Image (cartoon, rainbow, N blue to C red; front, side, top):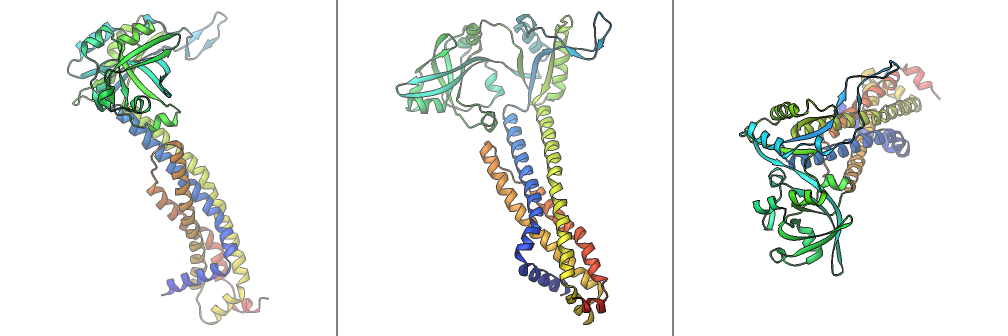
Length: 425
């Protein structure tokens, strides 16, 4: 009963001074809203990017040729520098060859399910009548479709003969068909698309259509248009290239991707022992997702702590107003004490009032923060994920601020001498 009476009195006091209470809560509202918005956006972006990376294959192992780091470099004048990288450009002879890939498949026959290779050809526009669409032409190996989930809506993927002989065929996204041809997907099979790639013209026959879905990660990076896949050999003939800087290995389901990445790096590293400028590195998609998530969590936590400073400022404002309130209600405190109110009941009255003020500010801050976070996530193209744990912690923290910053004014009110309080003008 005493608790309900304190709550009733606190609400009555806040209602009597609405403007002052709202201005006092402003610091709490801003602090909570900032923290919740940051956590919502951070969780949304982390979840979206992680989901996008996982869709590329959690079992994938990425292998890339990278510049070799020297432990030290000594100049003629005797000055020694720490780890440095050379400036020599990557050449064909430094890249991964087909012979290396063949040897790799022979070395790990049961652990490798497929090898995914992609090579960019370029961006262009496709026109049909009055319709225009942007495309990105990419050469891919047959293993690319194993490593990357693509749902075929019509047609087929490249045949072995098309892949090996470098035919001018393509598998395109459904949006291209909708934008350019505007015909049923089955009827689009066999149609051709013509495009200008650099200073060369190219024409490809459509053999397959995959379901094109919005990629939030690509949208956040400003990447748009339809990905058109052609055989890797076709792309290499167009680019006059033979070898690869990066490849992706699809590990079998019973194989640990991290363990396989280490073995592949050690094995291919043997080919680069005599290469002074470049070596090979391998890492799993699962480890990349984990590192990315940890990095985003650290960034969100750091920014949230900075934003949380506003909560402390708001708490100081609450304490200041509570001290003013205690001074203004000195005669009321004296009257209550004269009627038998204990120090503890007076103390609890003002602590509860501070807690309710902070809790109301916290609730408003949560609403504003969630709304701001959802809006920001939507504008960034990420799937909005409000942080439930962040909301709970923020509300609990609001109550804690009320107790902490409300205790001093409440204790001051509780220790007032009733006679002096009644004489206060």
